[in-house]
Image 1: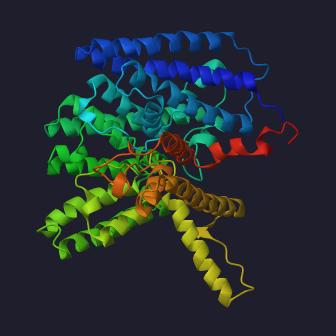
Image 2: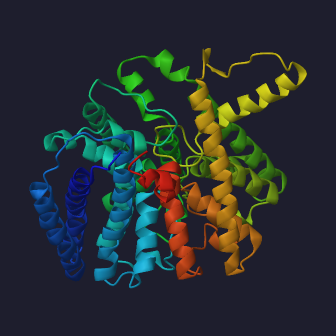
Image 3: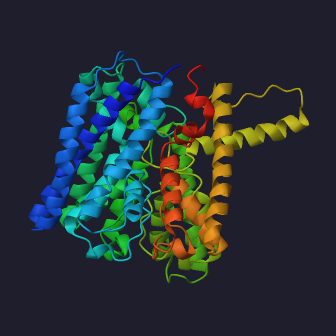
Length: 487
């Protein structure tokens, strides 16, 4: 099967146009704060991308408008890589981040909603650049291409193959007969959640600029802040509560919110993955709070609960915000957070990680394996909410888990060449592959990734993209079979 290169080029160019348009709000912010040089830097990015992209879209005439699955995977992989490259130019042209590798790392971290950073003094950056840095979270959270899919029919292109290759999670439910309509519904809910959080933060005394920055990081589960101390800068219980609630909401399967809009409240709360998601956060919160209080890390149980619920939600949803330096917590609490790194949010949410539904099914597979040791001839299907999971889905989840572990081990081995301590090496790879951001030791919440070599930064940048695109989308590009036109 030959790839539809002209159609792939046309979609890539359309994404370039959208990316250029997405930089306009940052240009406006730069002008509002009288950062003329920064505004000019954005203009130097926007104008060429806008006109060149539009020219390519107009001039490219594919012989077929049909996208196959292989085309979809290549479009998704190429768009995210190109977005990370082009999105780095405002950092470079404004001289905010002079190194291309550092700028690429920061941009890939933004679009993949990882929240890892190489910046040592965040507050020294111009307002417009910080706005763009966080806005990449918002774009990447729901997916650059999910937004594009709502517009692709205008180009005569269907988006089903693309959205299946990009959307996080093992399943994707269509909210309407047309996939483009589903994309519009998803982004409408995403925008509504964004507006609501901005309003609530402003009510709590946060200025509009900071409210936007931290809302982008919350609903996109990215976690990049405009302050060196992250959310701890505000020192506000109200702000902590608002951001905690919206982190948890952003980690929920967005398809379930459509059930609420249809007033199917019972179906919403009976969802197996959702209940597992809430239970995991609740158990982690109680365990950490008990450990913090019993070890006298904090004076009161209320204070222990305040910090434990925030960090449990932040790590589970892979947001990566922090209200305290959890790297100084007792080992037990840190271990709970480390385990949460491998859970992630729900499928079809903005969260990263393995995803709750996969973890629950893997646990069921372990239970089935133990049962069959006692009853070798028994036929025991894996069921969720009374329905048997297709063997193809179970096989796909098992393959995902094995590949995830292999990538984690391989990445940790490569990063160990830096000769950092073992916890830094393992947690940095786990944090990038799971799109979490902060890890432990040298990459803890009060540190960053600036100490890594250029090679390691590029390596971890691609790990962020691999994790955001569900492993296989990027890994397929390295398979000889993918490029074989006869297969």
